Length: 170
Image 1 (spheres, rainbow, N blue to C red):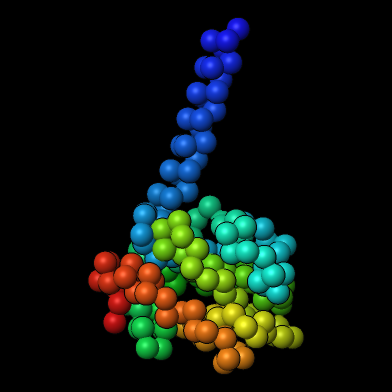
Image 2 (image 1 turned 60 degrees about the vertical axis):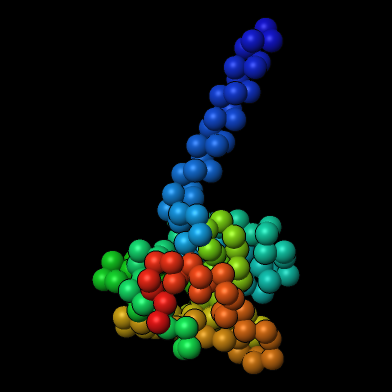
């Protein structure tokens, strides 16, 4: 009886470890990525009330380092590959709600900051978080928070270090 319990426990631990490795394989340790949240019902203004560590990321990043040609550290413009453009435009084209969408910039498994995708036609913008505008061509810009008084979270050295490592930082 105890052998069966131990076997089930070991098998369960193996599955949990496999699942964790699977999700981090889309964003290898130390690499830059932009994730949406796993919950598509949580609004940005609600998410910003919660600890960043409590927010669950989607299984795959919306933008990974593989989708980036260059990241301009002065303007925070991200020049995307053709595949990255298709991926992001596809995401935007499927959105029907005009409610701003939360995203998280991460480096590896470390969540750096919460942001907001501002959708054209949205009645408001969440003022104290950086944001991405849903209309873009080849370059996606992460804008500073609209209130201008909040610390500029985009300038985190961990982001620059990860992008430098992949020769993506301009």
